[in-house]
Amino acid sequence: MDIEVMRQHAKNIRISIIKETAAAKSGHPGGSLSAADIMTVLYFAVMDFTAENAGSLDRDRFVLSKGHASPALYAVLAEKGVISHDELLTFRGLHSRLQGHPDMNALDGIDMTTGSLGQGLSAAVGMCLANKLDGNSHRVYCLVGDGEAEEGQIWEAAMAAAHYNCDNLCAIIDENGLQIDGPTAEVIGPAPFEDKFRAFGWNVLSIDGHDYEAIYNALMAAKECKGKPTCIVAKTIKGKGVSFMENQVNWHGVAPNAEQRDAALKELEAA
Amino acid sequence: MAKATRDAYGEQIRELAIQNPKIVALDADLAGSTKAAEVKKVAPERFFDMGIAEADMIGVAAGLAASGYIPFASSFAMFCTGRVWEQIRNSVAYPGLNVKIVGSHSGITVGEDGVTHQAIEDMAIMRDITGLAVYVPCDPTETKAVIRHVAETDGPCYVRLGRSKVEDVYPEGTDLDVTKVRILKSGSKVAVFACGLMVQSSLGAAELLKKEGIDVTVVDVCAIKPCDEEGIINILKDHETIFTVEEHSVTGGLGSMICEVAAEYCPRRIYRIGMYGFAGSGSWDVLLKEYKLDSQGVYEQIKERLNG
View 1 (tube, rainbow over the protein chains, first blue to last red):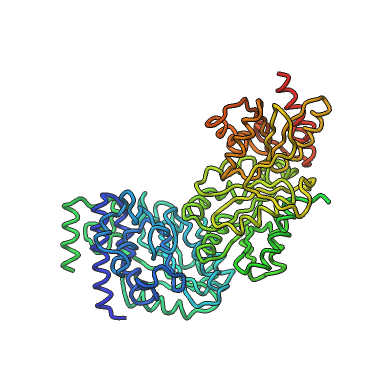
View 2 (cartoon, each protein chain N blue to C red):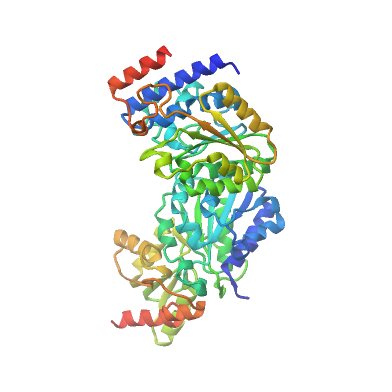
């Protein structure tokens, strides 16, 4: 993995996230920006995903359980060449393939329809069971929000993944510490994720979710872990990369206006 | 020999699992009761007990379907529909994934377990989900035909089954088109549309009415959605008074579906027989009697309306 290459892809993806949400005048920039580095390493250094095999099941798959980070996924698909950068500007529009939350039937490369929180990890477990039945070595990656992990279904899925020894599953918790109503610790306190997943029988790793090398090493270590699923708890910064959005809860589900967009793009491009 | 529709499900899904390596079964700690455990006997690697975690079961089934498998996910009707309505809507129906939801122990005839286990709203809440087919077979032969049909047909569905043993309506081995309504007994002026166990009750009621010179038509409606609109309209045209009979709330299920078709294409006076509130604990036969859904009860309800 070339860190400089990762940095450039992540920068492009962040720029796309800002452009998408600004064009749509809605969407979720904060949690998309916090996930950008994780998704960059996944798609550009770890998964065997290409524009050519986007429509195939014969590859690693990614479930964006925190479906509201759809701008990040669409930005990745543009960066991968699956869709054009122009199409990104149709985000959230009528008849757009880039629905508010990901629609697997709209576009090759979206591996699961998500958006209602708590449901994607179960689907990822189902994909892992299918891969085991098929006897293939494909891996399934699932990005879960920290606020999302307040959903009980996440823990049902965590129990099932461990019970069925889904070592082909890697869940990544995007722990940015903020949810709509405020800091997760103040809203209901879903942490600590490490202890919880460990108690559920998972292999657990903790990383800085903006350190490319740490992300890569953790994803590689997850591949090596046999007999149980891996959970990577990634500490992230909501709004990462745009100074006025960083760690600001109000940037969870609000799009930048034209002035804010320009300021954000200027900062990202200079970085 | 009378048996429950869930027993027929077990026999059919076991046979299909042997024939088709893409069929998988999931259950939520009720596999012995729903008969999903039959798959475990012939293909243990394709049977997944998800524990008492129905929401996860539906999501896992969605993931298996997204990978080309044909998952049959079962539990009691209450828990694989009501508890997981939103999972079915968003993770199964919206993406159009090929998940077969099989709810056993539906209606009040789950019996002694009482109201918490008596799904009388499942048809209503499943019927309203875009793209989700709903079937309510009445006997073992029709159940097997439904299971074969949904296994061969791409797309999500809900199949409603029962706990108690039921009399055969069709001879074993009959080839049935489960997408069409079927006239089981032809009469004049009065038609009775029924589904599930209420087909038997309605046939019994028709016998009692016949003794009094009232000859009613009895129709088996297995496909609640998509419904056989043409077949239903033809029957509506040929009759003056219509009854619907279901082991379900009178809102949202069979009665509502027939009313919708009639209102748009062929208005008729329609009386809905079914549940008008929660039931309670009791053996299934006692409950059917109490809520006038056995042959005698359906007969009395029809008679009362016709006399009224």
